[in-house]
Length: 590
Ligand code: ARG
Image 1 (cartoon, rainbow, N blue to C red):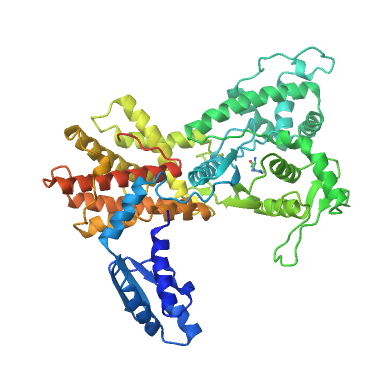
Image 2 (image 1 turned 180 degrees about the vertical axis):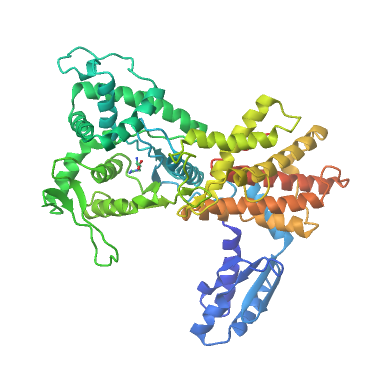
C-alpha cells in the first residue's frame, strides 16, 4: 500500500504538471507547523530558480489546481511560497481502515526475492559476554526483525570467534592447571572423553586469568601462541579440547542471548571458514592483486579519492599466520557461494570501521562478491558511564552483560514491587521483561553510530522517552480494551466504522497512526531503529493526550464509543508491532 505521503505527493506532482512545471517539485513532507496544516510542499521555492518566477506565483497556480481535489480539506500558500495542505477526515479515516485491514500495517514488501545476511553478536568462545556485545546483539536483532517484516529473506549469523589466540590462551592455561589431562599427552591414541573437563564457571574464569598472566609472563604467551598454531594445524588433542570449549560455551551463549530475546539463524564460526582460505588466497594471487611485501602477503586497497590513510590489507603474516581480515574476506566468499545474498550487513563496534573498509575493498577488487551484493558496515558507538567514559564496573573492570541486565531489572523491580495487585513472582517476571526492554529501548533510541550514556534510572523511568513508558501505554490500551470486552461480549470488530474526530487530540492521533508504514520502511532503509523509537514515543504521547481528554468506557453514544474502541485497537496494533520490530515484548500487566 502506498504511504500517505506518496499519495499526496502524487496529487501535488500532478498539479505541478498541470501548471506546466516539472512534477519533481511536488514532493510533500509532514508539516513543520502542525498548528497550521498537516502537510507541506516546498517545491515552489526550488522551482522558482528554474522557471525564473516568484515562488508565491507558482505556489498559487498549484494551489488553484489542488483546490479541486476532493480529499483535500484545505490548501493554501504562504510566503515565500510554501504550500500548506490538510486532508479531509474522511480520507484519513479510510486510510486508517486500509492500514488496519492490511497484513503488515500497509508496508510494501520491498524485500520479497531479496536475501540479506546480518552478521551480528560476534561473541568469542569462552569469553564472558560483556556490554560491548550488547549493542551488536540488540541493534542486529532489530534490523533483522524489520527486514523480515518487509519481506526480506534474512539470515542472522552470530559469527562466533573461535579461532584466535584466545583459544590458545585457554588451552595453555588448562595445561598449566591440569597437565595430566589426556588432551596434552601426545602418545594418547584412544578416543577422547565425551565429558568436558570443566564447566562454564571455570571456563569463564580461565580466559581472563590466562590473558592477564600472558601480559606479565612472556614464556606463557609464547606457549599460548604455539598452542594456537598447533591447534590451527590440526593437533588432535587440542582439537578435541576445543570441541569441549565450543560446546560448553555455545550452550551458555544461547542461554544469554535468549534472555535478551535475541535469536540467531546461523551459528557459524570463524573456524568453519578456514577451509575457504586457500582458495581465496589463490584467486587473489592469480588475478595479480595479492603480492609479498616485507614477507607478508598483502593486497593494496588504497584509492585515489582516499583522504585518510588506507594501509594494504594483510592476508598472511610473514610467520605464515592468517588474520582476522583473512577470515572475514573468506567469509564473504563463503556467504556468496552458499546464499548469494543481495546484502551483507555487519553490526560491529565502529572502531572496526577501517578493518571492514579494507575487507570490503579487497573482496570487491578480487571479485569475490558480485556487483549486486551490497556490503554494509553498521558501526555502533560506545556505551558510556555517567562520566562519559566507557562503562566500567566499580573496580574499573569490564562489566559482564549478565550483571548489567540484573542491575536494570532490579531497578524496575524496586519500582513495581509496591503495586499490591501483583504477586512477588509476577513482579519478578514483569521486571525482567520491562528491564530488558528498558535496556533495549535506551540503546535503540539513540543513533547507532553515536556513543550514549548508560543510565539505568532514566532508562527504567515510566515517564519520558523510555521503553517502560511506551510499554505502559500499550498495556493501558490493552486493559481498556479488555474491560470493554468484558461488558460488551457481542460486538463485531470488523463492522466498526471510525467516526470523524471530535477533538484535536483525536485527529492528531489518527494522523500519527497513518505514518506507521512510512516510518517502518524508512527506519529499515536507513538502518535507524531510533526512528521507530521516536515514532512510538510521539504516538504514545498523542494517545495519552487523547485518553486523558475522553472517557472512553463510559461514553454513552455507542457509535462514538465503538469508533474509539476501534481507534484504540489500531493504536495498540501499531504500538505492539513497532515494539516487536525493535525486539521488545509487551507484557499484559505492569
Ligand atoms: N568477535 C569479534 C570481536 O569480538 C566481532 C566479530 C564481528 N564480525 C565479523 N565478521 N568480524 O571483536
